Length: 269
Image 1 (tube, rainbow, N blue to C red):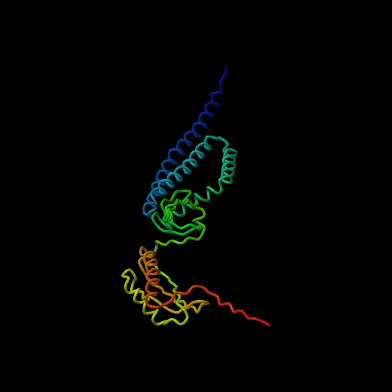
Image 2 (tube, rainbow, N blue to C red):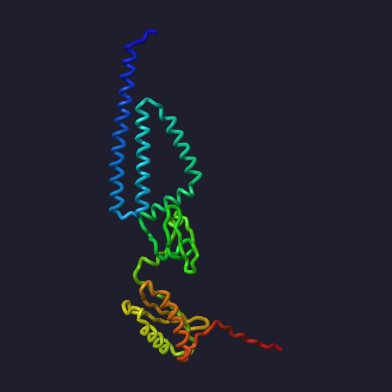
């Protein structure tokens, strides 16, 4: 059997150069990827990104970049990658469509962990639920309600919907509306309310408490009261003031009216 030495030599040189190029691309590419991943990790660390999210994103960046390096190296060997890449893209698209809701929640979790609209321990109201944030996961946020129920809310809804975070501010304003009967002494009601406010040390003097006649309603004269307290004292002041007003108004001869209707009967011959 005769061999064409020149042809074999040329073939060996051609594929040898391709192999060397592929190996060089692989080695250099993986080295560059490791540097990029370290830089990304440092950026996340300086940005105070949540540690769990930091490791997850670093791993994801590493995997994506390594796949790109491997594909480039295989392509340098002369392997036709167009069909292969198209197949991967089609499979990825199908999986993405099937898991669109899950991917949305994943993206929402990433956004929440990056921008921190709330954190563990915050008291929030969102999607019709109110509670303390117990845990922030990649796909869901876990709330604990005041009566110790566990609520699971998808992160996609939290990232794209409205939310109230009651824990971001140090102080909060407590709003009350107290009604007295028509004919009761309005100035006396003001005096009693001021006395109750002064007696509660949790109520701030600055900003100054506010009182005003807000409405002449059908069955009562309504007085609005607004006071500022530490956020942690909100419900304590709210409940205590309501209880004190109920007790002291009665002692001071001030009536708290309830809705009533006068019915007049006319007799006709």
